[in-house]
Amino acid sequence: MKKKFKVEVDCANCAAKMEDAVNKIEGVKEATISFMTQRLIIEADDARFDEIVQEAVKACKRVEPDCEIYV
Image (tube, rainbow, N blue to C red):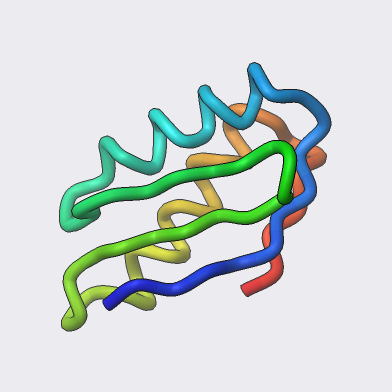
């Protein structure tokens, strides 16, 4: 499954760190975060997709606590 989410991130460096953190989550096939478009795209296992999205939100908050991801 592949879905897009709106994300509010303050800088390109933070977006890159968040992208790396999400890509390390088990079950994620590919994740990209674009600072320019303020989009998060996650492609992951269908069976655990909702759980993976919640883990991704937590991983992003660890990198930048004030970021917002609209799930």
